[in-house]
Amino acid sequence: CNQQKMAQVFINLIVNSLQAIKDKGIIEIKTYEKDGNVCVDIKDNGCGISEKNLKKIFDPFFTTKPVGLGTGLGLSVSYETVKLYGGQIKVQSKEGVGTTFTVMLPFAK
Image 1 (cartoon, rainbow, N blue to C red):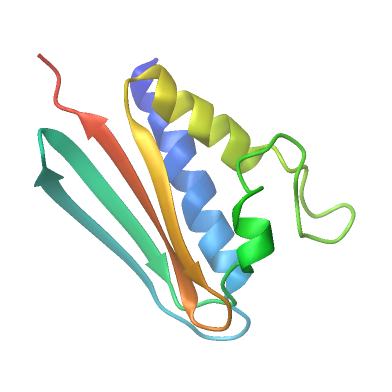
Image 2 (image 1 turned 60 degrees about the horizontal axis):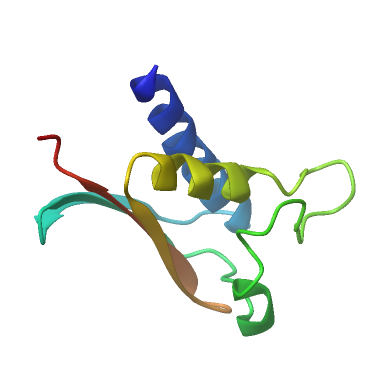
């Protein structure tokens, strides 16, 4: 079911945001329309992603989490799921400041 697959994408992104925040933090979820797409931003003020790791985050089995806490498949599967529905995921991040993932999906025709 498309809804279940997309729900998993958003759950994964939110869980990643939660894990990036040490004690207390903020996760913002914003929805909007842009260029014929439904867009969802998931923004956190967590630890951010280093520039060198930013290039690898969608690679299967890549993780920065300690052994036993991540498989490195969440973002890879999320990326492929969004792509399957004609969309894309973009990421902006600054180490020590936070990360924003943007999921863009075309409007159904």
